[in-house]
Length: 336
Image 1 (tube, rainbow, N blue to C red):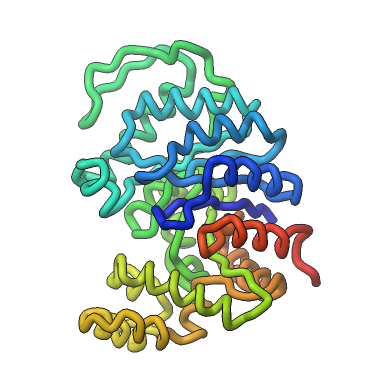
Image 2 (cartoon, rainbow, N blue to C red):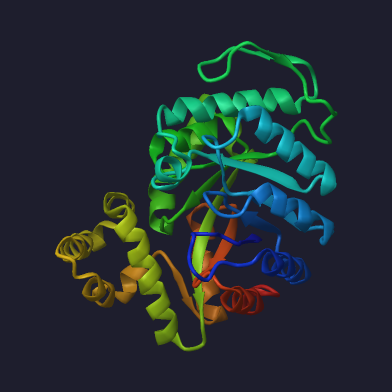
């Protein structure tokens, strides 16, 4: 089983420091985790951090999850990931996607216009650049390009992932990318919707779905005290639900629809704390892994059984203590 660690930043007050991230990455490598994944919204620069991480590790994979195609040019991204791949001796992979509100518009001041077309063109452009050959490009977003990278990339076939939830973006991943990154979705949604969308798109494009990765980021609340872990899980569940209720209602199992609509009504009335208290354990744990090592592995197994080929675990709360606890309870694999 391919399992990495996602050191996600969500702008919270318990932000991991750069030193924390470097030390946790070294620990993850020591504990046998496959990879480390970093996002990039309005927090730390992921490529700069990965450069430092490459210098203090030897084998662990380094994957952007994700770089926002609205905040860097396609050539900048190609230069950055090729540089990181050289620094890390071939351990870099590139996760791309379109970001979301509020990071794009309120952070970067860039409206989310034509996201599918933009991501498609970025993948096309970056693959040309990573070839190491001179290339031309005339597209909707970049025109008149006639150039090549000023150095030869270590790998021309560096893996590119697409971060996606909705059908058209998932299909784009199957058509053009080496893998799909999905987040804040349950095994139910992956199994019943995303697997088919992803594989069918790959087949229509003449590609073998078996050669592609389907990766899910799984939020984990590790604790021996299950009630304490559930409190954290309810908090992060409601944080995600408040940011996009329609998306959560769409991607959760139908048996939870009435409960989600009731929670949405409580939020509309401003009863946030009550909504968090009343979120049921079955619904919360359908999305978030909660409890001790055995409990966490049980949830991770459901994601693999749903069709995922690899996972990245993300600790909640987003602090060093939680990440260290998560690494400890998952290190060495599941106890069968």
